[in-house]
Image (cartoon, rainbow, N blue to C red; front, side, top):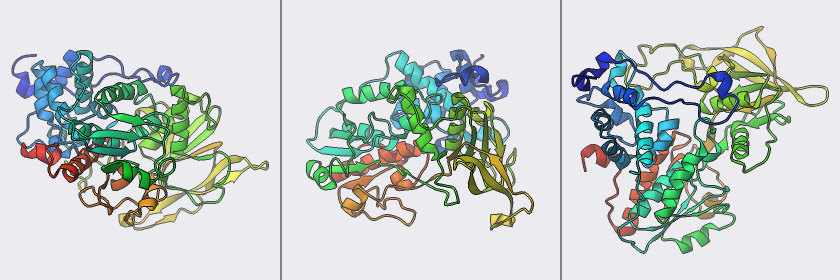
Amino acid sequence: MSKNDKHTGFLSFDRELPPYQETGKRVQHFQEFVEDFPKEKTTQQATRCMDCGVPFCHNACPLGNNIPAFNEAVYDGDWQYAYQLLDETNNFPEFTGRVCPAPCEKSCVLGINQPAVAIEHIEKTIVEEAYANGWVEVKKPHLRTGKKVAIVGSGPAGLAAAEQLNLAGHEVTVFEKDKHPGGLLRYGIPDFKLEKWIIERKISFMREAGIQFQCETEVGKDITAEELEASYDAVILGIGAPIPRDMPIAGRELEGVHFAMDYLTKQNQVVSGEEGTTDIEAKDKHVIVIGGGDTGSDCIGTANRQGATSITQITWGLKPPSERKDFNPWPEWPMILETSSSQEEGCERDWNILSKSFVADEAGKLMGLKVVNIEWNPGRKGYKEIEGSERILACDLALIAIGFQSADPTGLISQWGLETTPKGTIAANNFQTSKAGIFVAGDALRGASLVVWAIQEGRAAAKACDTFLMGESVLPVKDDMMMGV
């Protein structure tokens, strides 16, 4: 590369990402399948950043990552400084560099007429360089405040809040109902996207910094809300929105019809050795995944690895266009057809499909899904079934992946009498719930959303909690970063 590439790399280089292991090999295992990529090529990708006067990528990132600055540092070969910049805004780039859908890339100015800068890959490479070279530090506070904070839930929101509040000097205990910390990062995301040693690596740094983890403890059951409140000066709820949307159609009760998250969790427990076997198995079955999002895609990848006979993914929505339409201009999130790595591994996909009923055979076992094609009215204001299109799809295993409804209204929410919103999330003002000293972050507040939003809200809730405890806070959040505070 020449010195001019620092400013004109987008003219010299095309977007390039690390290759994937071929599908025939990667479906034989549950490990990550991204192959090696020379650092020099990652540096080339960083030079494609145009250092825009108005960096839309920075604004689109919920965390406010200073993307142009760390891209420039990568070009200059100063990987340690690139990591320092990334670490200022993102507690877990090792997670977001693997599982974030990269809203930054969707708003990249280069994306107006060229493929966007490979920001997510660059981020992952930066943090892995930092671990390899010993630049990742244990974030111990300089002083302890004597205040105690309980974090309920160890997903990305809870973990981010825990790290920030520990850095502020508070004694932090994270409560997790499952056997190990990580929440949906550990139990919901398959290992072929995020291997669990990556979570363990980060947790080990957090433990060394003084954060306590109390697993296999369900707050609201093993510990009551009253007991928790009596023992801690403040509480942050990062309990997610685990109640899934269901399908109240005939045959829903049949054996073989499952929620997607139950399926994914059980397989993750098998991969980690937490469980020996799973009772939801796709081997030699005709699998139908209902729902077109990321969770459905994870089900496809898992079913392929389990040896499904066939996999069909259906959704009642319209098939997205292959390119942006006039009503969906840059820098809006592009509503275009995308194909995930799991879908590339093998599945049939269909749109405008309405599920009518699950069908049993004479022995009462699931054998099919009755569906019908639908036609949407203009503006998606209702639809009608297409006459003559009703049919039964072969189905031994149905996985419902149509999203999540709300936080669990039982347990802590009911014990504290917390106010909730019409959509079932916990109501809050500046992350504080209707009960003083009780804060909330992530999906329990926002509704089911992205890992990167959960991290951002964990950081913001930590600042609000720190202010509640101390009267003021110097913990940074996105708005502070954007203002240069």
